[in-house]
Length: 399
Ligand code: NDP
Image (tube, rainbow, N blue to C red; front, side, top):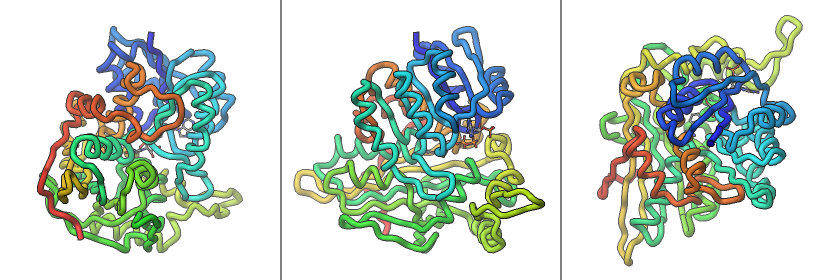
């Protein structure tokens, strides 16, 4: 009997729940637990069917003891953590205390510093190993599928990968002047931070959005893509042997950037608490409260995403390049699970990682990033579960 505890009830969680319900032969029972219980109940109402039992619970996962209590009550084999990165460590601690496997989609970030790094979670490796438990880190799309793509490229096409460019384009339009496609707080913290990429064994830092490239994305068209620091750069720099350069580019429209600039200039994206009518508030948290809820964008979003990686490297002494990507249609996702493609491209891989773990294909005691597992069963599942991939053996290479 596979029981799984899903923590979080936002955009990504709703896709995880929908896809677990579609795979009820593996996910026999799930419990959805989050800060706002009514959101969990709503997901249960939307997706439960006769082959899967869903329970719900109120949970503040900021405190390990709360998570421990719920795990002991419910008795899951695995926790799928799709709340926020701030809860990674409290949930990992609870998994260790109760002997439960762990999976997430975003690396730990302290609330007070916009600085996501794997060092905090990698430090748990020995503890998970000793406990015979598997922790799978960053199992969304990016990070997540981008790591699986890299392991697949290395396994099947390259003797050595020299350069990786990760390209994330969202050609979707939701009709709002400004909205973020996933949690606004996390999204804006990511974009307004300095850019950074890996080159020749060093991190090269740039100003926020300083480096721009135009790229013609299949089925999305020509877009400006900006260099950002993204968490999989850290793990791929460590896990792809001999890699010389890894960069990450994401597209933003001029309209989006204009709004972001204004919000930044007036201090609305700051995480420094300010006093407002006798209370301390974080401007960015306030901004989140007034922006559209990303989990409700689905019904209005049209267009496609195109996310993938361009690899350059060597096979049998020859220089080769290879581009592996997925195209996902916002409206098709909405028809299938009631969410837009950003939540879909994150929630489907999280379910796949959990499925492989429960099937014993991705069990490895310790704490691992996705590229450290066999990519083949994951790549098969992507084709079956709604995120088919496309290969291009002569891609345009970014300068
Ligand atoms: P949402 O903001 O839509 O959902 C977050 C959920 O977590 C909400 O239900 C929220 O509850 C709940 N939550 C927040 N704090 C707590 C807490 N202390 N205890 C319990 N529950 C809590 O975010 P998304 O669904 O968009 O994103 C989920 C995760 O996925 C994030 O970590 C994000 O960084 C990651 N992500 C990863 C991507 C990838 O490709 N790897 C891409 C996109 C997102 P409430 O409803 O009460 O606010």
